[in-house]
Amino acid sequence: MKNKVILLSTFLLVVIVTVTLGGFLYRYFYIDKKSNQFDNINTNTKENADSKTIKSSETTDSKTFSEKSDKVNQEGDNRILDIESNQHADKTSEESIEEGTNSDMGSLQSDKMLEFTGVPWSQKLEDELKNVDFDSFGFSLEDPTLISDVNSLFVLVNKANYFPDEFVPINLVSPKTTYMGGGDRNRLRKVAADALDELVLEAEKNGLNIKSVSAYRSIDYQSGLFNSYAAKDGVEKANKYSSKPGHSEHHTGLCTDVSSPVMGFGLDQSYGNTKEGIWLANNAHRFGFVIRYIKDKELITGYTYEPWHIRYFGIPLASYLYETELTYEEFIALQRGMDIEEIIIKN
Ligand SMILES: [Zn+2]
Image 1 (cartoon, rainbow, N blue to C red):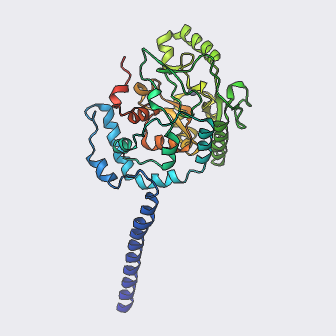
Image 2 (image 1 turned 180 degrees about the vertical axis):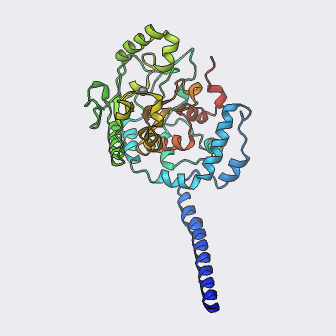
Image 3 (image 1 turned 135 degrees about the horizontal axis):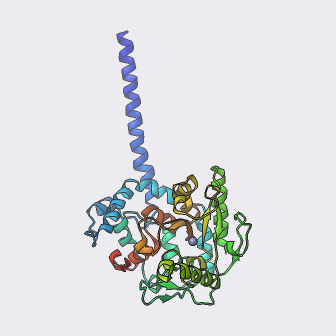
């Protein structure tokens, strides 16, 4: 009996030692090897993130940022693997190359981003963004900026940036999986339409019905829409939930409002608490989309929380925005070396 106990104890000890050692070796060799594939990883990531000082650290907003960075650091390894498992990124690169953008716009602020978010980005993202002229975007509500690179996948359209009146996006097609069967208002640029179809089908596999209900809007259509809201609620209030013509992201052909039967295919903030809304928030980036107007960022994006409005950026950037919980406005500000403070909308 005593021998049996000793034998059993020895066996258990051997198992524990093997599992511990195995786990350590796996982490050390396998995950480290993966991380090395990203050029921009600073080997001191964790140290940097811990010791980093964010300029505007006294403000309430940046508290959220530092908390976020800590969370991100803890989950860093998984996130790197997530980014790498993207399957659709090539498509985006192809379209960016095909469409062409300005070149030699200076180096990206990837080090600053890393310092701020603690999240390294992939070489794919670096490649996709290297021709984007972040300085061409404006942040002034009083003196909005006319968008120059209108067909860029990375175009910023908001209250401070607007399209020329005659603008119509390239390659508009109807996704196969829309709610109303693909009328004019369900068109998207092909790259976004294909990605949306994949998202919808993947949702279906998970037992969820998510459909596009309102995608591309012409500037003329938006004009009518905005004027009717403004007549009802006044220009100022209408501007909080709708957009002045030329200023709507729906002009890009890269975004859509989605909904589900549980909402009667309507749009309401409670969508964020439904199974479909939760799945969307956690998975849209895998298909190149982000929830564009996230919670508590109204003073950055100019819009209240819209859990239904998804914007296509391609998988590398969408994943990065998802992981860092940055809005695109914040991302651009950091690219330009601006303080987040500078882009907060002050009324
Ligand atoms: Zn929308």
